[in-house]
Length: 589
Image (tube, rainbow, N blue to C red; front, side, top):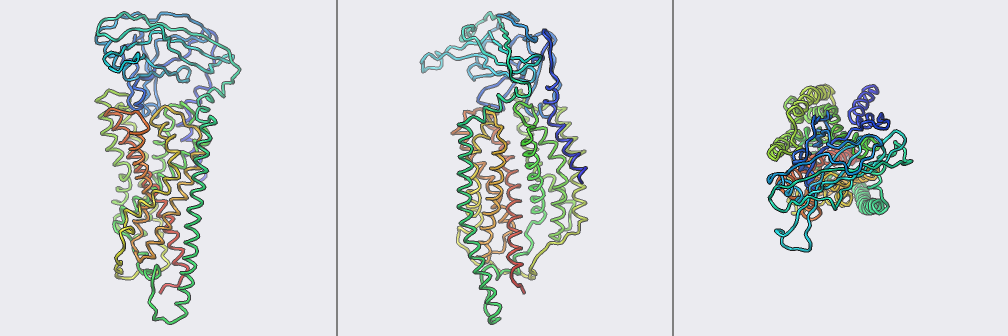
């Protein structure tokens, strides 16, 4: 088992740590060619809508080469090609012309549309990112957009810092005085040039990425993060302490009352949660779907823990291109056996017979909606000719991973779960016929209970959600994974506790159908997160357009669905532990 875990860790680390290992070998002599790749262009406010650099009519150099990319880079929408600039090590250049071009009317119109949408470009120099805008709009306090003037930058100034034989930092500045007027639909002569300046620095190579990491660790950002955590902790401690006090006192009274009832006359009628001891462990309806949900939720929980482990050891440093996507694909494939084992084992405990059908349901429960969403969004990306459209070869690789790794491990886990012969541990015998559930007020139905269960965990994480969204759906860098891990632990604790509390109140009302209710209440935080997506899109971001909107809501629906399954599993497991504990503490006849 230890060797298996070490092998799993080695596979994951080798899969996601490729950029750092390559970059650590970059040493140069004066005049050496340092790799510069143009990556993509796109509207600044639409992070998913990116296009190849040369989709815009820039000067295309001779012998353009595409960089061979890893799986995660392709999934991230990176499409690196050799850039038109020559930035040799420690060679300075002053306003060197690399291209003279006569822009046609169509090319001028294409550039103007890009400038109007705030297009930016991204390049990589020795694996260091370079950003810049391709042009600017001169509004001159004019309210009518038809009177705006549009300009294309034609002079880029690179400033590069080096330490001995290594590149440490690079920045790009667009010359605001060297412009091409794109306002009118007419042919324009453009002379593109660039300047390169080198400066020495004492910053060691190992710390060259700290510049990007520190942007999310600035004092005012850290203050907000810690305030968020302290606020969440205080809120959680107060509310959970309050609920714990009530539950402990009520349960103590219940145990005392039931003990006295047992010592008194036997003809006293039982009330409350003890009254339904013969029904509380009656297996839920749709047991195959229930077991599959637990299996998928357990796998996603394991996946999240592994991702946090990699993040905390520093694998996901800024601009490690595609590392997170690579980790997600690899870890999800390797942990599918956990889903198969958990689902098949629990399904057999629920006296299910069609374990093969249960395994198929487990394999499709999360991947099915994700596949349908991907097919639709990939079609949209192909229509837009965006870099988010996956090449056919990448799709084949993902299908092969699912066929040769995910599916076999799922089946092996299912077989192991089926053969585990584990029996469901129920402290009380289940009666042959279920008791009738008494009429309950509206606020004790499933939807109001889910609303109450989801609000408290969501209130503990909503401040941190903004920074995560600004990183995933924007250009902000997020690197304080330790704080995020603390927030995740708070989320798990609160979800478990609020589900236990609501399960107790449900049983006290003599409603024994708690299995699905506990799962739905635990997972309801995922619905709150999706509701926050609506707020973020319309109130906190400037995203627009059909492609960006569909990508945002489509993939966030999949992520929130994953949270629903994961937190639903946490809620049910906590409720199951609690129910077993209280019924084990009394004598059930």
